[in-house]
Image (cartoon, rainbow, N blue to C red):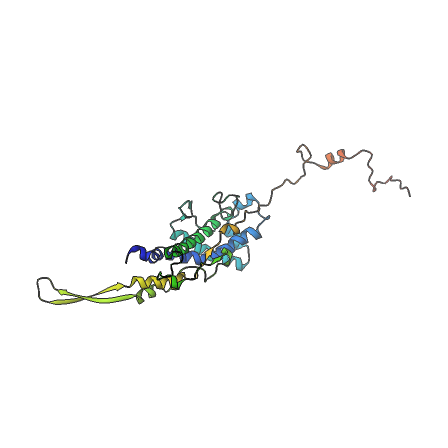
Length: 283
């Protein structure tokens, strides 16, 4: 078989672990990202976001959030290690690990433009979805349009499925824990006989071969068929709404702070409070 005929098998062997770890991480990471950008909106100032660590923040919240944070942190760091810290198609961004002592600001979308500022969580969310999308698109491209005679076409829906990233679940990611068992099922043992060097003794040695064509079909059927393409992940990105820091005293028109004395001086001299003792009431 030509390498091009086994393109999906080769690509799956290279990227399986990344696809699997990323797929498992995606729902939890999106949930954590959205919690930070919803529940902390207008509560945390920029200065506070630099001083407060993400570990300290989550430790102050309920157990459900703590569990979500710890689970996301473990899988996120596993993903970063797996990809060698390089995040984004074209390797345009360096990934960073989640650590309890790092400031909250690192995990927030703090600037309007993508790719600028911090945005660590969102960068990994985008990388996971784009990696799966590219794989599914490669699969359909390798079959071609209206190629009903292609051996893989009978294993796939006529059209790819599209979902929003927030709809990701255990059925949307690519991968499976029984992959080695699948490989073993396609082993084909055979024996090769030969003579021992300079003797008439005959020996037989066992060898293993693999039916790669059928193995590729198994992979498409079990791990790829029906897996979705994610819609543009920018639909979930939200620029964090920081609480605005303000002075404790209001400012007058020239920027000076009011005090009670200056405020009294600005009042009309003819103004008389209804609580003054010498007030004359006219009925």
